[in-house]
Length: 616
Image 1 (tube, rainbow, N blue to C red):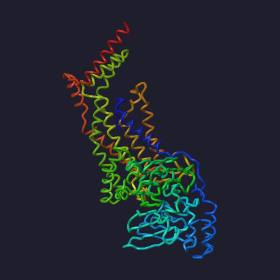
Image 2 (image 1 turned 45 degrees about the horizontal axis):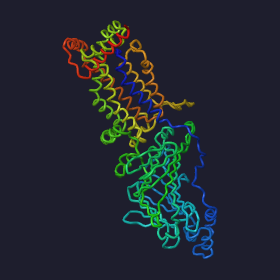
Image 3 (image 1 turned 90 degrees about the vertical axis):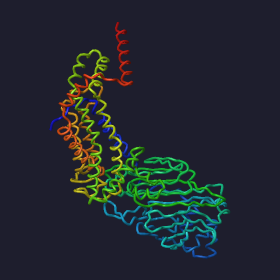
């Protein structure tokens, strides 16, 4: 293969793309944090001693027992009535549809188990978002008699009804038959989203309006993917505030106002609390539980949100929703509640390209082609063909710079002691010949939005989850052709083939666009081009070993196509002799300078005159 010579400026565009890749990889690397104990998390602050005693003794009390009622009211005040009902014996109520099954406990009135019916984890276990106490929802409030109570320790009375196929579950924490705090769940067929409301009735004289009730929602995220470090990169808390703005917390704490929804995203699955009445304020905390990727950790991160609930006329009335389901752009976007922002598609123009171009186009290809791997290849081919004019302009610029190289060398030698004059004469040569070193850089810069958009698209594409292609059994995770008996930092304990193929392809591409004379053309103060040529494939080989095989398949295919396009341009389109003749012809013609070029040249001449005067 003939290697191409190129001036150093024409590779700046590729360096910038490589720099973005390095930055994104660095930015996506999870920070090291201390690991929590596998069997404990930060719990909601323990209730009062009286409330704890109530929990222990509730099983021994009989319904409608006046002695039991008096005893319960001594410990719990007005809410002692709830301790005398049959629901105080414990138990759960199940609601389900064709997608989701939920179990709601009498104690606390909150969902103690949430399972997605149609999905499995990487090791074929059903996907649970809530199970075995990894999540809690507790409301802490004070009563007019000075008691502080926590709903997680109190018993709600369930009532399940059916309304035209919708399951309605009312969970009431009663003061009397007509006075209560209610959690109300409504599940519809074919929906991951269910209605959820918190309201009170007749509690104006029971709840202390001087103290704001506080809702605490905590979740300890189960691991669902093969690579826990990769899953952790895309696991964080996202919230919407001020009617449309969104922010995220990856590890640490934050707080904000006017919150519309809070989402605990675990890469491909999310637990979301939405409200029709924005929360005035909320505070958030996320803690990473993955200290060492070598450890087969069960959990990824802990999420915690603290939400003050405002009393209006002494009562609570909040209409909300729960979402337990896949982090699928189409599903979330169809709710028309700005939930598509949960998917990390990139900001600004990058997200726009994904939302309005790549997502619908990929969905179309996946619908007509027999496999998702072929859909990735087809989309890559189309993208490279669309960008081929940019590749052509870049290669044409390289050819012109190669032809002008002897004359540039002459100018460098002639004005080696006068850098300003050398620069001035070089610019004149470029202007006469109709060439520019920036014309090789700009086409590469134009590809950055596409590059970054696709870098965000493939790791977030839920459709690729557990879809196989060739030797890869899951395009959303890494492929494996060999298991290693040891762990290599940053690389892992396995060998993936797609990153190897992508690295080889990008190395060949860089060899074609740089050439053996790269070091000879090295300019003082510029990065070592030969080092960068070897660094980019090495970075891809190491860091992409744990990334989605679909992403590596895209880069491998993209670089192969680019190599093919460049060979076609070189041998079938561009004729260097014709280019040389055209350059010589252009040099003979009087070149009309634009205003900027003329002004720049005047400044250079003035600077040269000033330099001569200083020497005299």
